[in-house]
Image 1 (tube, rainbow, N blue to C red):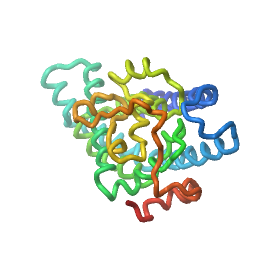
Image 2 (image 1 turned 120 degrees about the vertical axis):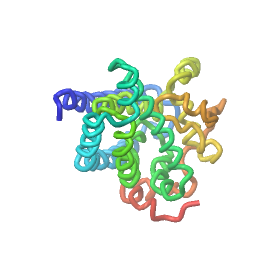
Image 3 (image 1 turned 90 degrees about the vertical axis):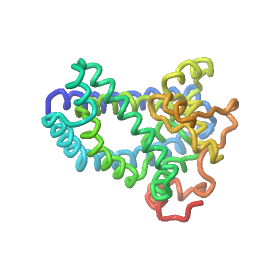
Image 4 (image 1 turned 60 degrees about the vertical axis):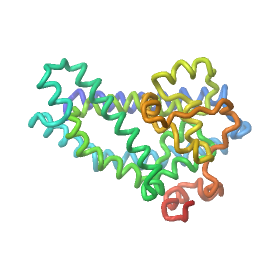
Length: 273
């Protein structure tokens, strides 16, 4: 791969780890919910499980899909196929506008894909692993079933070509998006006055806590990952004026075995309401 991609990938790993550590410390000093009552053992076990399953997902993506994404991107560029290439060639758009357009298209697809995971029962079986975490924190951002990541990565192959996305734009999007995703999953005390300003553009902790509510009308809202305006445009935006009262998780997956790595892998096979 090109040197810029290698550099961006290294940056992605560094940013992911740095943001994880910073938010973990912030959660320790100023948590929003008192999940662990000072028990580092319980918190460490919770973090290990979520990060372990996230590491497996990352390994699969690296071994199977990154090369396919690169091939799709190169083909689209060489054949000048895809929305952003058509716009660039037709209107002489500068490189920076190509990148902005690509990021907006990728984030719009992320909104659509997330919503599909809630509305299509087959996909919900996998996505419920993410929602079954009743102690949501920064590590929950990495807690996704292998099946969900497989399908998400698979669908990206034709979309990279259709959107006309350079792979470096995808990596840049992933860096920014996942940093924001880590932040809005984090169990941090973030003042509402700042949350309110930030969520004009970006997804915030108080916005995403509503999405992780056990009450389905709240669960089926706030699907955005990076930019919050997709929910506003699609009328799926919802707030809870008392986010501290939100009960997180899923009723049918409250047992301790459901929170283990084995339990998370088995979740799609279980009966779901």
